Image 1 (cartoon, rainbow, N blue to C red):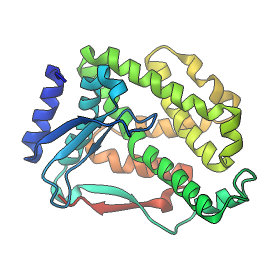
Image 2 (image 1 turned 120 degrees about the horizontal axis):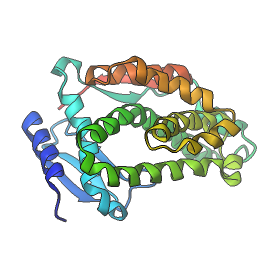
Image 3 (image 1 turned 90 degrees about the horizontal axis):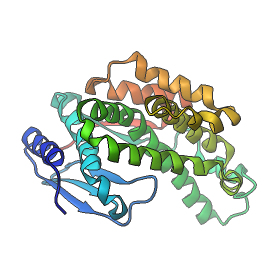
Length: 257
């Protein structure tokens, strides 16, 4: 696939700043709403990987710029201040308790309950890692690279549509209420921010109906209270986790190149 000038610009910046190449490749295993991801070189791995779903090929230049931005933000910090977010096993709240208490999953075999609990935890941690800082990254790209706006808006609208799946009756029945509402709160912050940017106030209507809009606005307030600098990525994530009652899940470990 032929990449555009902006993609090459970001790839070159990452390689110049980190001293390591970036491999870009399609990956059909990515699941919605994940259109792309970055694996930062660590523990002796001699390159960074940016992968994108083949269905998002038309957005690839934007997705590469977006994913590379996370690497650039990490390496913009001095080595002693570079940290990675991992989860802290065994802390509360416990997703397995949610699964066991929920009528739709209370009678599942133990192995399936554990797998479901792991899925809930992984999903929420992924949102915490990527969504708040991702809003900063996307806003920066929208400001500096207007030529990326069309694919960016396509990607944002796809995320809004994917988030809306949580309101389906079958999803509400299958997911325990507490993690369902935690996901909704983060999605509401996303919908509020981009609804205002793109002139789509209607994106917030289902969150108002679910009584979750205020929690989303509370999360969004943290983005407005902190300058969108790499040094504030960690405090921003910590603030969201604290508001959501997930602070005990977070474990920051030094980045090991």
